[in-house]
Length: 78
Image 1 (cartoon, rainbow, N blue to C red):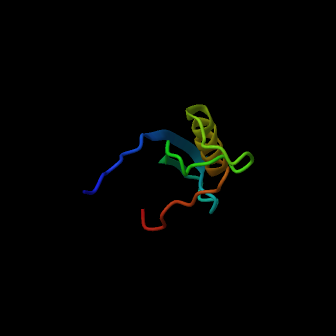
Image 2 (cartoon, rainbow, N blue to C red; image 1 turned 90 degrees about the vertical axis):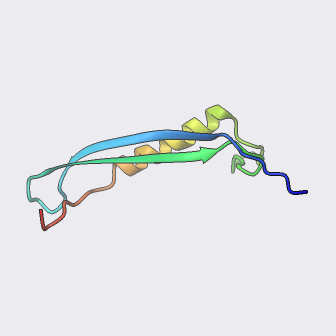
């Protein structure tokens, strides 16, 4: 008999509005969803213990913050 386990997924929605990196003057809006699950294999790299809900939130927030700092380019055909 096969047992299926579904782990809780935690999502963080990141949004940024930046000027085009190609200096065309356009403002670009990007939205991205970051997600992780609470499971026994999602461990904190520093301690090796499974991450708590708060640690997952912090990791997702940090990932979104790094993404916000990356430059964006608009499409050339629009």
